[in-house]
Image (cartoon, rainbow, N blue to C red; front, side, top):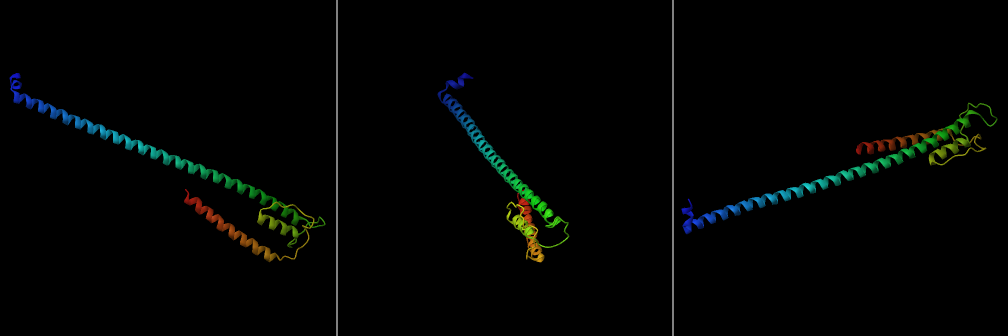
Length: 167
């Protein structure tokens, strides 16, 4: 078998075949290394992108929760004001200026004060003129109240639409 390699041309063929096999093996291994490198790089970029998306979602959820909390606390403050207005209205219409139970439907200055305070969101303090009748017509008060309720329903519908869009 070694006599085959003793011939100069045959030895050259054997060396050339070994070199070609080594070169092809190196190319194959190098290609696999490069392929694995780029696959790992793509995978790490994909993971980084996913982490940034997750962080952005969590930040947005935290911002929405904070806005919702602020909105709810505002609503609670407004409800407390409304309850105070209603309590004052009950006391105004429960008795007249002489302390006698009143069953009238007149518009007093106290009613106007509370109505305006509830519309503007300001605090209201009872006054000595609360039980005096005013020249305001009850129909005008009802008309303004109906308009306020309509606007309230519109805003409530908008809030529900925004809430549904963000879910």
